[in-house]
Image (cartoon, rainbow, N blue to C red; front, side, top):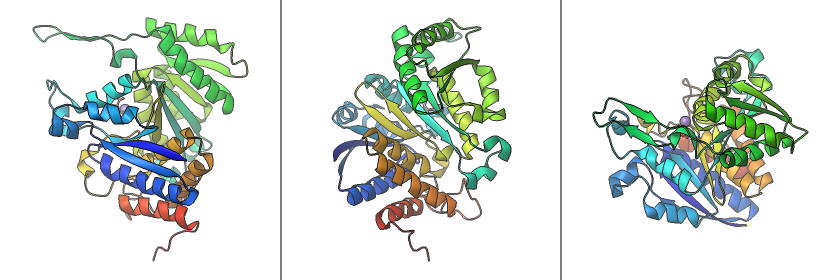
Length: 359
Ligand code: IPM
Ligand code: MN
């Protein structure tokens, strides 16, 4: 199979983790005789430094011309501490999501028994946790009108949704539930927000098209608690943009590290794959970050291409590195492995069909 992949390395640890995914994709391509080609584009703080624009037109063009986009991370501390900066790295990612209509952000949360000890949750709560979050990604308060009064003392962000935006992601979430344990939980704040009531009404209306899925509703404050006290109750979680942003970081503590979780952002005709973690500037360039979130994002990309065996093999390689202790410092501070070593071992596992010689 021939696939053109746009690669946006981005900021901080983005380049080093994404390079591991490319190693793994290359091992898959060699083994299964696929042809993956990579075209690189700039986005984020690095794009501002080089071009003045967090999302240069060239990057949008290569994304449009590709079959999928592999993305690293975005953000730089020099902007975080400057609340009045007009141009910010994150604008690049937000504009790309909007431009390509990447409306469905899919974040699976799984656990590895060998990592249970890393989670602050108790063993009992971690067993059999397996849920997937569908986060709306191109609407809501992120994209509503933003205003700051002339004297700079009052600000507002408008949260706005229309039925179509809700329906298109809800349908994807229902289909996912049909293929899983047939339970869908809509997370909202319908006791307070008008947008949440529109979400409930819309989701309720289309639920009759998916009679085999059990739909329930949960207020976001309660959901934040339930994710910690009883995460195994969830199968598919559907929610709006900002609630999903917050709940997905929270969910990562279940796995044991933010560095482990992948995501896919699906759109009308494009798809972007990225780890859920940020740019982790303190670790940038040190080869110590966890590449697993990125490698598992590449596995989600293979699934998206319909290459299910290949995706399963990448997940198996990752599970093998994790269970054999080839892990980064966030997982094992006593005996950490380099980012590049983990990527190499995962790709060796794929290429050799046997565990690499680790002596
Ligand atoms: C994420 C990130 C982004 C978001 C930032 C970098 C704009 O936190 O993908 O979760 O808030 O959506
Ligand atoms: Mn986030």
